[in-house]
Image (cartoon, rainbow, N blue to C red):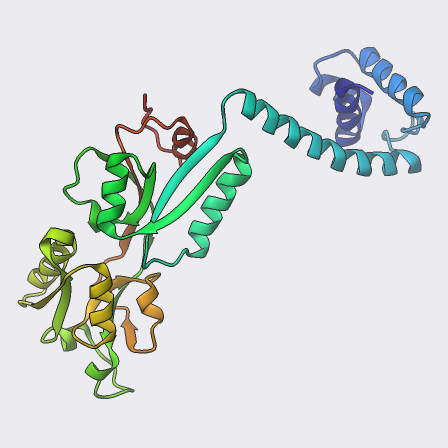
Length: 297
């Protein structure tokens, strides 16, 4: 039983006639019939009814043979594709970094899982780090790429990025700042509260975002600087100030805070970022999968 015989058999079943199947297989109808006859002889089964007044149909035995063979053949094709990918060099490891306080949402999970289904021989090694560690490790080659928030990429050089999708941004407010549990708040209610940022040497991009937002809304924010990302999250839960966080930040699930969605707050880009100097060939397949147009050497 050859691969060509199986393909001819499937073509007849799926097109409903020997003539149409021959066209899809780019061969003459007698040539296709000869291959089907050889297949029937080898498996000792009559696969098709030969009633010329009706549409070509499977026999009962043919139906059982088709259902079972289709499942087996699909598995065979996947194994063959994996083997060809391995021979073609479509294998390796991609070291991917995520911000340590970020939850892997369903959409990101599906992107990564679907990529693994397309390229089963490429291992995705996922780790977590702070914002600054992500960028540093991408620059020095410890990581091949990272997924981070768009504002963290402002002013970065020698990096390339692609926005995957946007995340809803909340104003996260500690519970002790909320005097009335059932009050309908507006964003102006929080302008006099201290806004948490991170010291400039750690992440000055977030501070710029806060300052830019305040300026566009006509107020000067009271800024409290955290020493790093972890300290920022701790101060937020302790009630030292309010902060802008994306909807999949772990802190948004804390019982100590309440998240507000206001139309004045823009969504946050969630982006894949990598170094323009990256030489990992496996990364090219992830970029191709994500429809990154630019070709890399």
